[in-house]
Figure 1 (cartoon, rainbow, N blue to C red):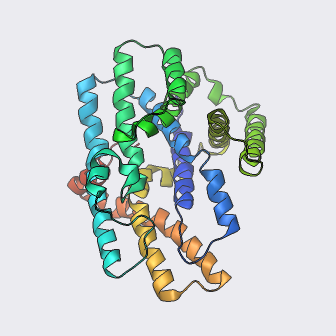
Figure 2 (figure 1 turned 90 degrees about the vertical axis):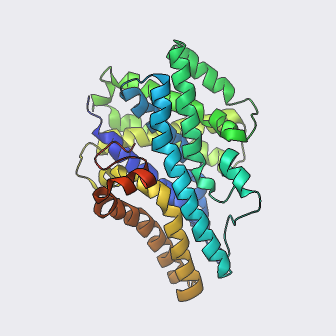
Length: 333
């Protein structure tokens, strides 16, 4: 089964995440804010779909073995990156640099139980993903068919859940993980290998997503059903785009996709350093400086972690395991 496009898709997804996380305390741009609002309609659901697809593609493990594997793969980087972010924010506080999410007195509680409320809010994804892996494997062990699993996940999307252990975010994103498992099953039919009509399908998905994004963001329609539909259309738009253009393993986005874990875990620290250099040093008073600030933040937050993985961490397996949860050459999906 040809899944080279998935690596390209991961590269696209992580670039969208980095763009969505751009922040400045000195200026705002209607174009950047508009792009962020559109990206936030589907970018993390897209990552959940990719995770579900790759999970379904892998060899099933016993529940205990899966928990151990995912704890090392996800929760070890969660602890190590949290420590790095904490050190960086303490250092920023020492020089009175304004932070979007400063360190608070109750952050230890948030670190253990509710990371999306703490000093490293972006790490909610890997915390929630660990819970989702465990939950899905338990459902599989109970021989739950995929259609029933999807129905349960869809119903859970509308149930108010507590924030402890990111259960509210698990409930909001489980349906996309299971949807990714369904896409893996669909790929086994060969439908993704049929290039005829794929361009029309891509155009239709993007048109539908654009219309729904306009209705949600400009016209103010709301409700959980609309947000799910927008996320699904955004996901299918990116998926068909990858099927059309992402089958070359030597492409730039495929290379970025291979470093998506490093980029996700390290990009906020790098963007914080770049923001300090621009806002406290170079200055962002002019429109040109603001655009250069934005461009350098996105490009360096993508490229530096990828290069760090390629030229440093891949040479030190223990450091790679601690920071990225996997040794060099292993699947870091």
